[in-house]
Image (cartoon, rainbow, N blue to C red):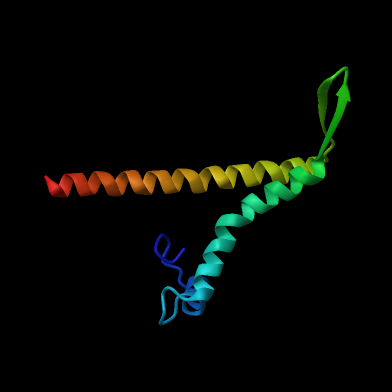
Length: 108
């Protein structure tokens, strides 16, 4: 909001707390990891609760079943988690592709 809309009121206190004098502090790295890995953890927790996996031996072979029992709220949380993972992945890929293109352009 600060750079796009010019409203610094929500960002400035958080920036001072996380990225104060030392940009690479443990606190800032933990905050970044929390933001990036929270959707992955949410997806895994919902999948563990929703999936039932059964294995049995049948006539000398291994037979398995996967059953999903879930509510709409759990499915919604999984959908949001997948969407956020997709957005983060697209951002990482596009940022690196753009940086590589700029380097190629500047190197001639």
